[in-house]
Amino acid sequence: MKRLISAGLLFVFVVTAYVSSYFYIIKTCDEAIELVKLCEENYKDGKNAYETAEKIDEVWVQKEKTLSFFVNHDRIDEVELELSSLLLYSRTEDEILFYENIETLKMLLSQIKEDSMINAHAIF
Image 1 (cartoon, one colour):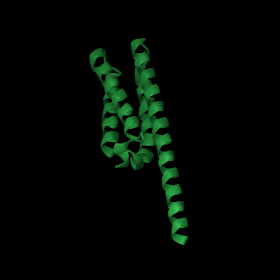
Image 2: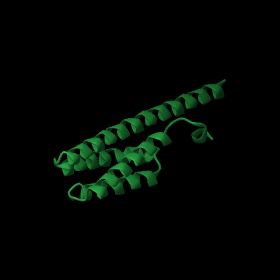
Image 3: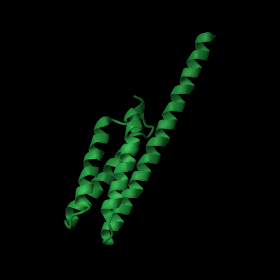
Image 4: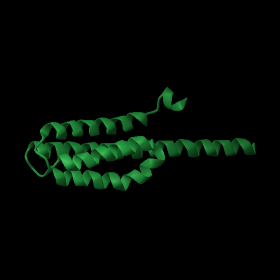
């Protein structure tokens, strides 16, 4: 009976940790995607997109340590690389590079969200 109680408590702990991490990842990615869209709108309207890009970078730096427990480090590194490029391209007049970078960043953040979804691949 003691083993059953221990196993049950461990199961509850694992499920709680997974659900918490899932909601943290989704919240962080949604926040970052909204800021990326705001940066894109600012660039399109001729406003200062660099300030928004800096804010995205600040948010990501604050959240990346916790995300590194739950998300593949390669994904985090790819997002950081695109964020550094976004800081650079948000000050240029080259729209093609800026929009390409924005779309890549959106795709990476969406992939992180999709990777955290519960599916057969994640379980097995």
